[in-house]
Image 1 (spheres, rainbow, N blue to C red):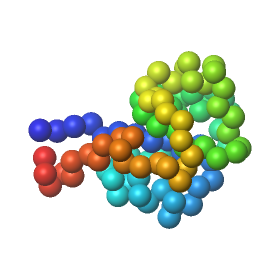
Image 2 (spheres, one colour):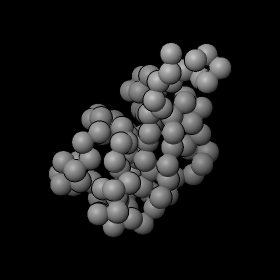
Image 3 (cartoon, rainbow, N blue to C red):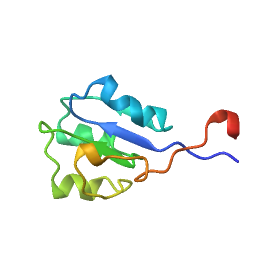
Image 4 (spheres, one colour):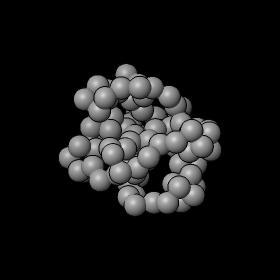
Length: 93
């Protein structure tokens, strides 16, 4: 059984070390910083998650245009794989 990996987009500067737990949990992580709103909307197509710090402003229009995003409100320290269940590894497919 094959599942589509869950894609997480990172819009602000977060270290690779900080993103590694997401990768280890089987998520596809794409990081591009400094995007304008229209570029960010394009980048978010098909993404279930958006990680920001303080540079990127998440507006209602941005959320409305990113239909695939899942919604939750939690500090970064609370980000866990319970929000996005781990994906099966290629070996277990």
